[in-house]
Length: 449
Image (tube, rainbow, N blue to C red; front, side, top):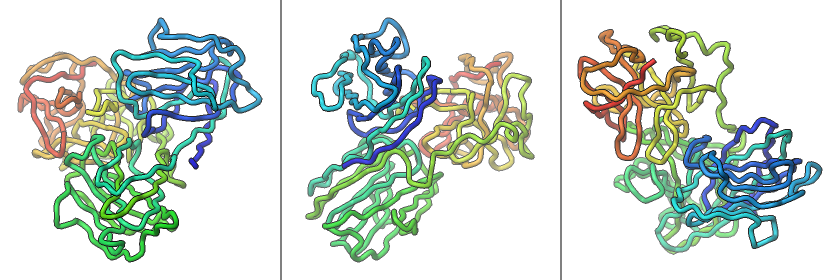
């Protein structure tokens, strides 16, 4: 059994992205031609990226493309494969670098290609175009089992929530991590532990537990129980999935970006799970505010419009306005955008990674999460290498320190990421927020108009 999400795509070739936790996606699509799928590491059209075009070129052939470049890696003649009047079922798989697509009910793919340099796929995007709109039914939340073995099975998350159903006698364990592995930092939620008598929130596998509550009989081996876990800017909530009542709550004073979840069972329990990766009912992903009120900066923000080269646009809770300026990428490949926020009387350039649900700015040796922030929209994307206090001509001003010193927008490479932050000329470094800390680097790139 699985959950099916209905998606409508317009004739505009704009992908809508959703997370995936396994190496395949099954779907039905009704379109006259050009049903396009993208497989990416982040919920955005960015490289590395596989694209599978089904029924392109007037519904005559299908291709696989990598990184939006030609020539296509492989093509197959598929005349009449799509139909604008009825749903047709397909599957797309990726495993060990082999990307393939096939028809529902058929084991042999109609198109396949092996990538010599594969990358981990965490999101699938769908779109239509070239004169066609589409209706999609995408399967999600397939059931799976966890054995009586304390080993996590991991999957990606796209937003600050995870909904699941669990059937088992006790000990449903869920972890939230910055990578698909059991590493610190991590949050752990244990539901129905201690022979189905209590539940806890644990941080970095350390005791004492952050929260402990009595929950006698919370789990049942004969029926599914529904739960919802939410996290935003360090606030962790565990809810009853039916009533929405908060079961447990804890605020982490030093939050970290959550990119993956894991589930497991143990201590004599086997579990049956249904995981919903798309979104919680009644909680659609945030959309950008309408343009009209965005272009006026709130009191205390210097500048507002910046010399015609860009706008600082108000946003909150992971919102990403159209035209946001990309600045780099997180350790997991998700894009980082240029953002800024107020802190302790300063307006500080920092970073926005959408899945975190907030922006982060460096100040006072620490990383500070900000649910309210501004994003640079329509501005420059020219990065010039420099070091120390050598600010190049035309450097883009991004804010001001609490003492009134101009802060510029910079970025550095650190532990597999390319992270944006603030350049403070009097200090001779670019500061970034990373892993709960403010880190300074004498060699960096600065954004130039």
